Length: 88
Image (tube, rainbow, N blue to C red; front, side):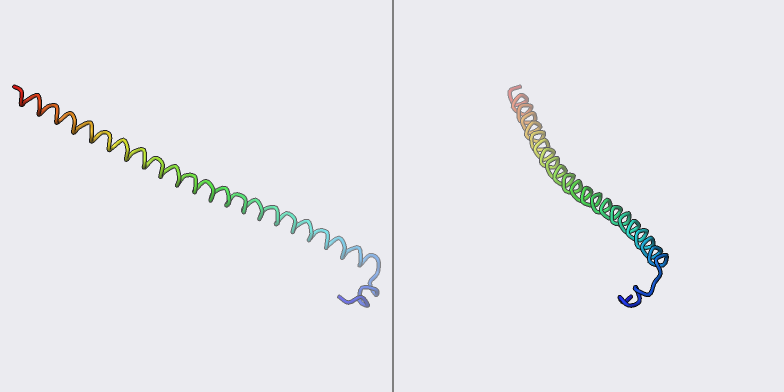
């Protein structure tokens, strides 16, 4: 709307326009807050996914070490059993 068109409007028409603009402004603020919350939630989800992936890798390392230790233990038990049977 041009300046000339605005000057031709009555006060009540200008107030109505102002009220409509205020309503639209409030609606946009609400939409913005919702969008920011969704973005924050997605960022948290992304951060947690990274943390979960890191934890999974660390757990995998722990399980690999435990598996290696278990294999060494079984190898030693078998070796000791064989040495014990050789002495008999």
